Image (cartoon, rainbow, N blue to C red; front, top):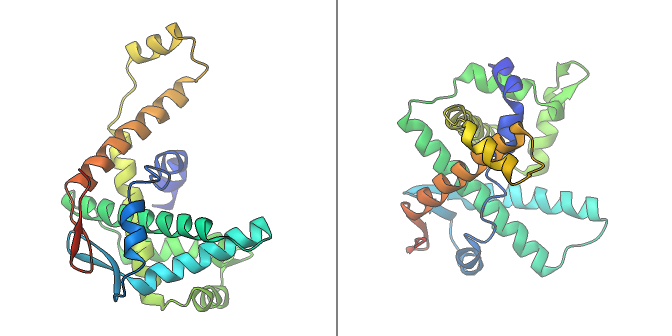
Amino acid sequence: MMNFFRIHMKVIFIVTVVAFLGGIFFGAVSFLFNKPSDFVVKVNGTRIPVNLFYSIYTRSVRGYEQTANKALDEKELNEIKSRVIQTLVQTELLCQEAKKYGIIVTDEELKNDLQNSLEFRDGNAFSMQKYTAFLNAIQMKPKEYENLRRKQVEANKLKILMASSIKLWNYEVESAEKQKSSLSKNDLFFTKVNVILTEWYIGAIRNSKIMSNDLIFKNT
């Protein structure tokens, strides 16, 4: 399983949809954070708990502030909130789609994913101490974090499946050459993958019910 992911690592990186559609949820998110709730958002009836959001959001803010060596202003904090919401909703939509294809992540696959994560390793071995310290830092229980990781791996599996069905045709290469494009054949392929997955994601959003505090957000 891990060899499979290593072989397709570039595909996973290129087709990650986190950067897709930066403003697609911004209006909904700005309203959302003025409403108290035990969940941040529902995706087709599936709740995304508020504590999961805040765990990821707090860690993201800390990372940005350490990198920038300054405190973030309100606009920057709202942008991070929006990105975290997008990422969580995107992952949930991909997992829901993955289930339609019978894609699952076994306990053994999840165990391998965690044990091969660099942030949890001490030399060449998995460090339970580092794992526990990480969970304490993000204030998440093992089961909560492992459920999130399972969903992320499921989402990556679906991305790989979708990308593997996409082909770059000769006429597309010839068209790029006529336009004197500087993109390589591989670059053209990954660009096509991104475009197709973006279109899929837009369609998934439009056909989904994104709910918070009994209000349904639909992209039209």
